[in-house]
Image 1 (cartoon, rainbow, N blue to C red):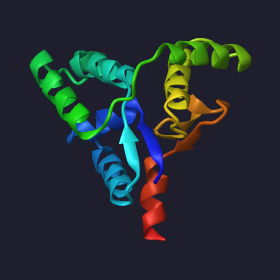
Image 2: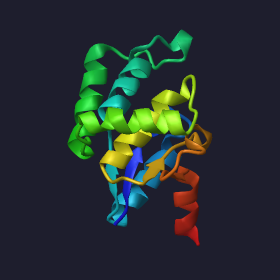
Image 3: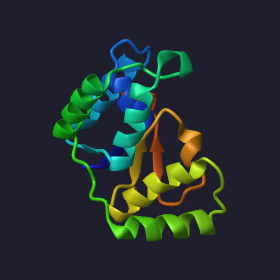
Length: 152
């Protein structure tokens, strides 16, 4: 059994059937679960999801209401466990950004890596592998790789 963190971009596509990558992401998550792997969320992923889901469509959001977004978040946290938020995440994050010279918006991704490290999760399912490039101990997995591995 392998533990995976679901990145925000995965959760957004998984939750939005009209997204062109919904099928790919849904299939990849289904394959992981059928293999008895575990998929996790973090509070940060839920927060980032809320930001995009409630943002207007004309500024690259989904334009969902608060009620719709809350309903989807409730469904997500019923389906996937949320890792505990501990003070160790901040300490781990600070070490990672300092030792790896991480700057700018990538610091948010490194916080996910810190939460993974503290929770003993090594794999992240993401559509943006470069967001986690160079972060030690993180195994980046694209959903297409999961789907392709089932075809072999």
